[in-house]
Amino acid sequence: MQVPAYVEYEKATSVEHALALLARFGPEARILAGGHSLIPMMKLRLAQPETLIDINGLSELAYLRVTGGELRIGPQPQNGGGHDVGARVADALQLVHLRAVV
Image (cartoon, rainbow, N blue to C red; front, side, top):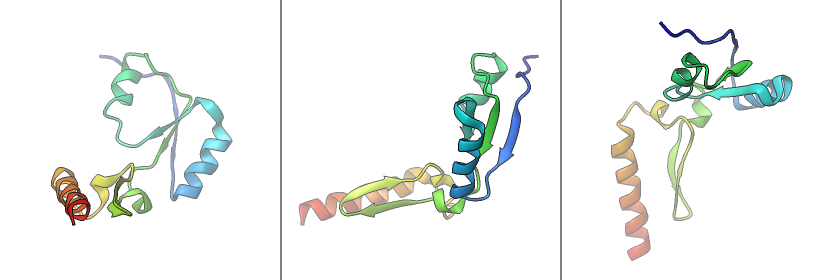
């Protein structure tokens, strides 16, 4: 069994809080936004951050929208609305395409 090294864990309550935590813990801190690549690397000790700052659940980062003809996807789009992200991206890309054609 592979076990990551000891790490501090902080749960951000807002974007401002996450930024304050990053400033406080410095360059050895890492953002945890899903963990699908970071956690396995930590288990293999290929990544050894001193602090993890968890931004999962921050609703202000859960966006997928078309603004000025651009598709903008926040770092936590899966938390926005509970719909399939792939379908939401496809819908948004169709909207962008339709605006470009018209």
